[in-house]
Image (tube, rainbow, N blue to C red; front, side):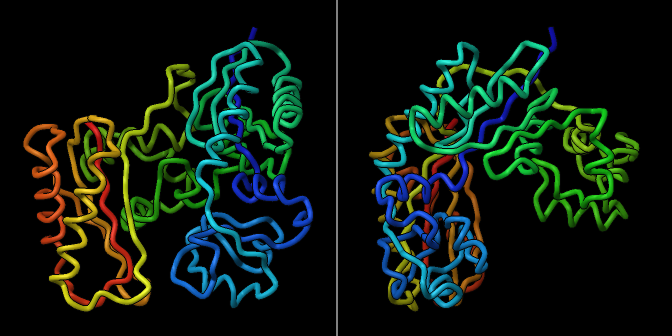
Length: 337
């Protein structure tokens, strides 16, 4: 028996849920975000594949999406509907009879012991479709990293296997940020060291990189560049590591006394939603006009559930912002202990 990790990722999940509720939208460009009014400020939560052909994607301002795809159907976010659909998807995956590790609304890892992971993947796809009407892509790997990356090559609604044997053929010449876990900032740091591709990172001396980037981070980066990662699928219930609250303002906040008051209010409003989970760090997000975003965090002396302490930490994080330009969005995130 061979141990495999399957990564199940729902295709255009939020848009697909909306199309199931409104079959007349099938085949049309659908954009979900904000309250569904593209004349207002807000960002795209997801876009159907038809809308993506026009350059519409998650995080894009709704007004820009409307300019790029004027014929798109814009819909408001309906969190309750997506959570209900997600619960049905995860129940379908668990009916497979093996361990399922939920990563969020629309993705999960599934453990599989057997010789034919492609057959198992197609079985999972059938179960999800029969239960919900939704399509998913399944990535197959010897560990979580390989499975997660494989999914991207199988979309939409396909199955793709990535293993140590095929790792460098597929990824070796790609930029380091092609790897799950490496973002733009880390890729930039690596590029400054002359490390541009996955192969270059994989052949870097771990001790040398540890000295340049950090004793834990450096060797870990070399490890994932070689396609090495955990294969343990954890079936414990999914628990969010943070919770946030943010607001896009229809009129710019020009006065930073108003910005400060809004951050304090967001922090106070956030606390009752934390379910008494102690907060260890508070992060404030500021999106300046026209669309430049920065974040700063403030660690707490000790984890707490006290509103006053969390509010004070949010304001301390806000004080780290040096620019006092006009603001269009504010957010406060509590990271749990």
